[in-house]
Every structure is written in C-alpha cells, then in structure tokens.
Image (cartoon, rainbow, N blue to C red; front, side):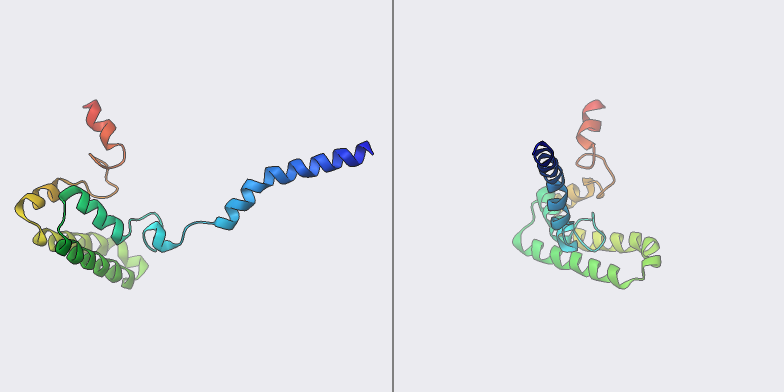
Length: 135
C-alpha cells in the first residue's frame, strides 16, 4: 500500500512539474504578424506608426499616409530575395524616411530627425534612458 501511495505522489509531482512546460508548448510563439512581421522581433508597420505618432504627434491624414508608406516598404522588402536584403535594406529605409519626412511639418521633421533609428540605442532606444542619465 505504501509503495502505491509513493508512486501516486511521484506521478502527481511529475505531472505538476511538467504542467507549465506543456502549457507553454501549446501556446507557442506568436504569429509573425503579432511579432511585427515575417522576421520575428522586428516592428510591424502598426508599431512603427505608433512610435512615430508618439514622437511627433501625427494628424489622422498623416497616419494614413505613413501607414501606406510603411506597408509599401514591407511589401517591397519581402519581394527582394533574402540574400540581397541586407545590402538593399539601407537604401529602402533611407527612401522610406525621405517619403515620411516629406509629409511632416517643419516642427515634426525636427523631432523626426532627432529620433534614434530602431534598434540603434540612444535616447528612446535600448538602454537610452540609462545612458542619458549617466552622461
């Protein structure tokens, strides 16, 4: 009887230990569109528009146009073969920035120019506030 009881306790303990792992496996990673695009950790165009709006306060018309520009950029980048994306990425991003900058007022353009590039650090980027406070 004691050995059955011990076995039952062992099975229950093992089940309780495996429960978090199985629930995480069922959830899996979020779909690409929720992660921000086909590349995974990259920002999706909705997040890029929100980031820009937070920095420069876009009008409704500007948001619509900026969203279209970002969608166009993402579609164009997906059409480029993977091995060529790295070299063409910089050109595409520069063209996108110029299109967006052309939509902005002079005050918005100044704020836009002061924004750090995504993933580059600086104020607003990874560790930006800490760097700012230390200097």
